[in-house]
Length: 197
Image (cartoon, rainbow, N blue to C red; front, side, top):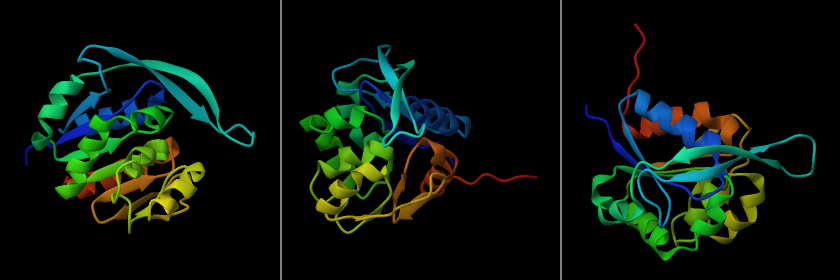
């Protein structure tokens, strides 16, 4: 079976693990991941962030590594039919790219065409910006996103930090500590089988 094409939506200060670990895991099993950011081109770099929980009332944020974009945003926007799934990485990027009408149109394409939608951590903020995407769905995300999920008509699922949740072809998780489970469930939705001999 040929690899699938996945569109990864990012912005400045997207969570670095949720870019790098996801992209590398998917590419390791033969999928193609195009990492895009509004108004940026293939070859551009974006700053990432690293969120952690260190005993404060909320997460801390530290500078991450630069992430290399491998697809021009405007090209991906014109070629949505070639993608099998969309992935909304978390961190701080979703907060601002969700207001971009082009990003909203991309998400709407995947929703209306019933293609898989993958979201982790704050990535759900991108989805709730498009009416109907989470309505009637059970969705995991960072706990701080619970009110937004509920107001958008979804049901927030309070997952453990290492769990992922599947509702139809939507896969979600609370944050980067769940990447192993999240990636495993995304692969199942994509029809990817890994066999050990």
